[in-house]
Image (tube, rainbow, N blue to C red; front, side):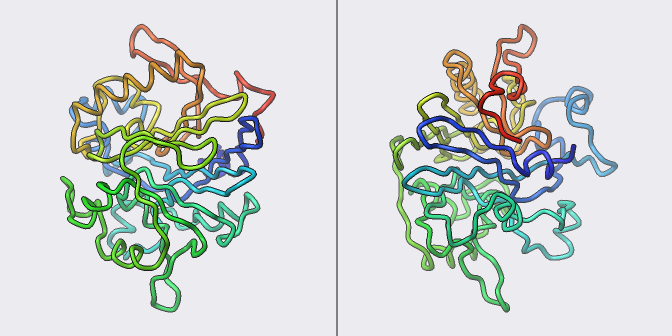
Length: 299
């Protein structure tokens, strides 16, 4: 099953009129060494086989949350505004688009009331703009856009170990074209939706929690981008603060396991979400979600 088909209609009913749907906002390949940092290739290639250019498959997965009060999109994927060089470097799949994925879920761009960013690297935020007749316009013109204030400031300043991680020109356009709410630390966004500043990947990276009446789902963003990154020392070379990633992701994974919550993956090419169980060798293991909550899984 391809990532696109795996995500096409995957939804979870969390109870209390909160439904979460996995939305594929792009599909690309990134360097395996960068994705796993200090981990030797003979180890990571067993779980993430690279292509002949050492790149591994990555989904750019977003989450759509529908409640009685709002229709929220978390992250907007990598978009489709790549030149030929970058399209080749990242092996961008032109057949996958955020707009098409939302349409498959029965949602129009104008239906989105809130866009909530974990952080503003291009593979999580570029889909917030689209090119219309040579002009950049907001993809979700009716939506309030939400991010940590410190993350937005760092993004405009280009504070990253990779020059291309933030696209300042995009953010300049977006800053003046939509309404914003700036978060500062932890707290609620809407009923059933809250954020927690989890640092690590960037200083002001935030993870998102969705709390229904029967289930809680956590979207850790790039704190734990794939199932493979559950291993404590498997940390991306892209991370600004790797020791924070090391400590914070273990704390969050333990909380998810102890509480019986669900964790959603932003970059895992295989599955959109899992439960967690203890594993003597790796610390935590991802358990297929449909094997544990058949009553609420829809696909």
